[in-house]
Length: 349
Image (cartoon, rainbow, N blue to C red; front, top):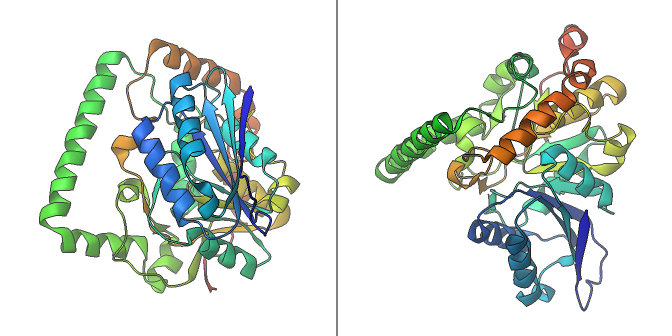
């Protein structure tokens, strides 16, 4: 593992309050530059930035290094910018765990490389909500939901949602996704108001609906649309689990639980396991706070076609976690949660 470090010539008068952790796997350089810029320009709290390249191309790393060096970061709240690089892909769980462990602030926010931030001060907004209540370990800017549907899907999986189909199937699936997204974009263009109205209702449900179903946020394909027309209600929707990215974590509470379990997980489900452990052992809660961002499906790397080398690594990791994941709390959580569900709540901040 190799580290690169960029420090501001003149540090902010205040020490960093929060650290951004971003894992990167061969993301398009223009998209990555755009998304990093959106974070740096939108944050209002003094912060550090940790970028973890997951076996990515050297040219991409040099491109980002030059971009940061040439950007006038002194006018922003960024204090330190660090880059870590793994020689070969270790996947998201290990990357996030490294970034969180290397952070030196009380609060850490994991933001995936395909996420474009639109809200000025989204960091301050999330931290304000977190500080209001002592029993919070994590707040997602994406969404929250009940465990059961995720748990049922997880048991049927190999421990990850990454696909290892043959190249023909990958190309066909990618083409289908591309066509589907083009149709969706056309609908947004021609029926803009109608689609946003429907989406806002799904993102921010009524209190009665949420307390019945426990679902809120940009779940599923809603993640790829900016919710500029939805407004803000200073609400925290507390459910059983939250979704990764953007995900604010209280590092003190995170460390109490031993962090992400990279022995039982490698790509996906690890944050869900952490939330279940937080509730069982410490009665810590997690929730959703609406912030404005988008993550176009075409910008993501997990859905793109894979090389033989990448497929080989996925298979190796599926075999690596095969036995350990059966010992994880998530794998056995159905029995534990049967009579011990966290209550659905709505809190204000």
